[in-house]
Amino acid sequence: QVQLVESGGGLVQPGGSLRLSCATSGSIFSIYTMAWYRQAPGKQREFVAAITSGGIANYADSVKGRFTISRDNAKNTVYLQMNSSKPEDTAVYYCNADIRTATWTRVTYWGQGTQVTVSS
Image 1 (cartoon, rainbow, N blue to C red):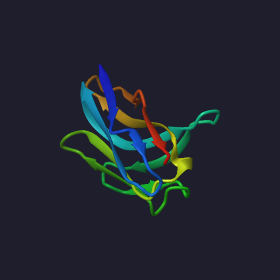
Image 2 (spheres, rainbow, N blue to C red; image 1 turned 60 degrees about the vertical axis):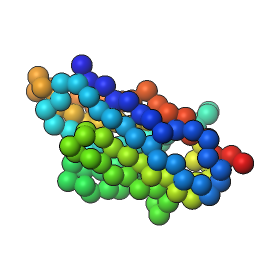
Image 3 (cartoon, helix red, strand yellow; image 1 turned 30 degrees about the horizontal axis):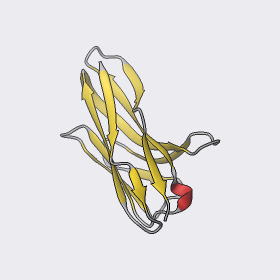
Image 4 (cartoon, helix red, strand yellow; image 1 turned 180 degrees about the vertical axis):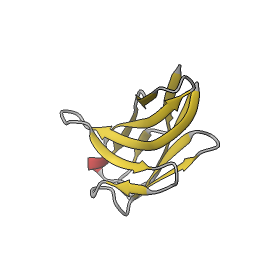
């Protein structure tokens, strides 16, 4: 019914950049907040960044000043620009969206995740 599909993950060297995308499709009436989370091996999933439908963003302290979240409402897509990457950014990155569906239910959906590895 509703799908979130992440892309753009991969291997990046320390100090390098990567851009993640998450495209949303399906029976959507509107999308509220969209966000990125990540989960490193052996650790709990943690918040990375979020952006409201109006474009207000907030970030985890660990990525503030290095990562930028943005969205294209016309494309129902959220992005995460990762700059100055560090080995501790290595994780599976998940996008998440708070969605009002065409049947008027409001649900938080998750993508399947994309692996980001920061290593030389």
